[in-house]
Image (cartoon, rainbow, N blue to C red; front, side, top):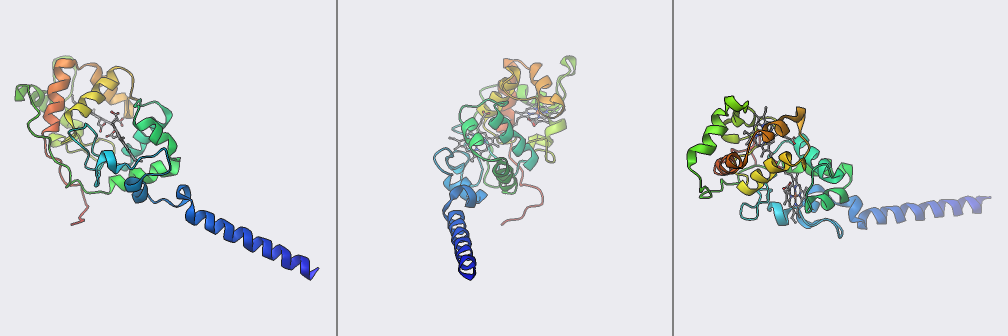
Length: 228
Ligand code: HEC
Ligand code: HEC
């Protein structure tokens, strides 16, 4: 009897140490958000930093958006939308669906807490008269029921709270791509369908200049974060 008990104990111990070992070697269990950001995870998840930059600052030349300092609920909703396919993107879809729900949430929090200092306005991209985009951004076009973008995205598009993402300094091609995605039904409308209905009223002659206008604005430092 005593022997049987000892054996059970031994087996339990083995199972436990096997579990502990498994936890320590398994990247799927152990990887922290910063590991995933900088080293990737397994075969399906390339390091986020390889496209979004070492500090989540984005890559203007390649059109990869900045993630640093955007609201966590916004980022998480985007990752979930990529994972479900509601937001269509051939690059992000496989990455987001390889992450678990918890990992998507953790990545969103991680990037929301990075400061925006690394991000820069994408200068010299505008080949449109500077006023076209600025007019729409700052005043909207009331005749077509288009409110000023800055009403929701903040002065110069620096972003407001957790749900109105910054546009300032994002690559122009990325911003234009998102407006087209809403027009083509490739991206969910977002809170109250606000952006889907605004994008529906824009045409190509609006999209490019307004995207270039915001790309050329300086991203402000993230609120309440003093890392330096
Ligand atoms: C191979 C390049 C690449 C890698 C690696 C990558 N991304 Fe992306 N990411 C993109 C591109 C391109 C877009 C823009 C997609 C679009 O146009 O809708 C994007 C968009 C996003 C967005 C939406 C941003 C917004 O403003 O709406 C989030 C969030 C995001 N990525 C998170 C991540 C995370 C987290 C990782 C790592 C687990 C990651 N990405 C890895 C290329 C990449
Ligand atoms: C009534 C509020 C409102 C107004 C006005 C508004 N937006 Fe938005 N915008 C939003 C919301 C909310 C989101 C986030 C959508 C989501 O969660 O998917 C957004 C997201 C975006 C994005 C995607 C950013 C990213 O990181 O992917 C772009 C681009 C954009 N808006 C451009 C514009 C432009 C250009 C205008 C002016 C013509 C404008 N918005 C006016 C509410 C607004």
